[in-house]
Length: 227
Image (cartoon, rainbow, N blue to C red; front, side, top):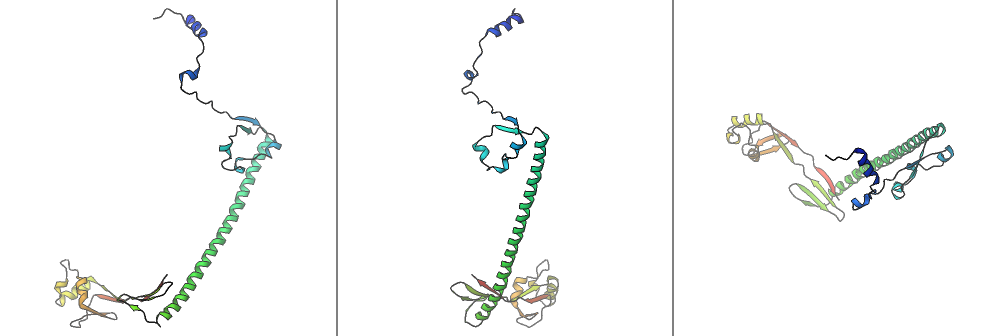
């Protein structure tokens, strides 16, 4: 252990020259910018621009180095009044905006009603015209082509819907076991090929037997305008 006394060490440190911090680091750190606060008067406060009054980028372009501080009752009361004014202005703008939004929404609804009414009316007229001219026909649709679009009649046709429980009973009772699956579910896709549909009645095409367990509905024709 060194024989030096605390007093001797203190004396050495006192006489040692101070080192430059920049010598130990490749680049000296920039001093932190401090904000200077100053007490503001009421007359100054009434003419000052608050952060919300300036463009959003103003602070980044010109850093503010002096900030005021409220130091008396008069300035504090002004700040309270200012907050109330800002709230009232916000509520006014908000109400005005909501009124305009409602007005715009009403215009949108009005335009939608006009579109739907006029489109429905003209579609009816086009359907009437469509029935008066020859047009291309396929198994599922009829089409009449024009320059601005096509008039299309989608054929609804019949749509038989089997009642599996009743249909299976009928198939088994009438010798059509080959159309019954092991789980006793009708092989509808195959059996359907052997049927005729008249109104709400399903019959076996070869024998004319009325088939129980099938609900037959007729889908309406659908007329559309493709644009």
